Length: 239
Ligand code: C5P
Image (cartoon, rainbow, N blue to C red; front, side, top):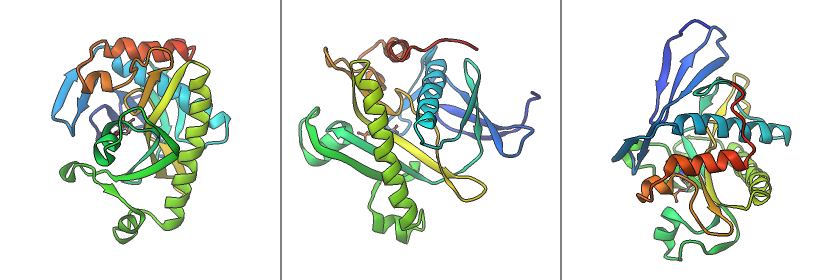
């Protein structure tokens, strides 16, 4: 495939056009950032793990009825995805209190929630990705009420499916973030990535964190933790 122009560069990935206008090439980077880009590092091997783990999750979700943008893995750092127009919302689903929720509501990290909760954050670096409610989303014209409801339902479905998968691997799914886009027909499609960068995974027996909190909190062995997730998922480096 000939080298095509870059469409977008984010903190952890680059997106390139391909010769098919409906298809993009994603190139994962080894960069790690946290706290709205204030903390940065290069972690060799992280990009490959996120590329491969995302592929496993997207394939599993597709097999279980959750339409998403993933097409195929191209190489250790690259995958092909369907082109969508990203809705600038981060949809967070939580099963336990952690991270920003622990700070916001003052309940100890690790506390199980009575039922999963869904939150929406506005993807805007300058504003620091603020929490939005459905009225904010409506007046800002970020999504229709029907799309908000659909994102919530798909978020809960993804939560059920990922919890089922991870519990078999002795991993607690604490919370995760997903993003959605609209395809050329206006259909909502799960997009972006699902990886230890975007989920909290705790070992069921030891409570060990196997996700990006190892980087955020300077716990060390970041890539080793991502490799542990990949290995428990039965990951193989085919390409
Ligand atoms: O920081 P917070 O507790 O709100 O994060 C909730 C979940 O969303 C975590 O799994 C975190 O990794 C993910 N997240 C993300 N990208 C962000 C903010 C949060 O992937 N910009």
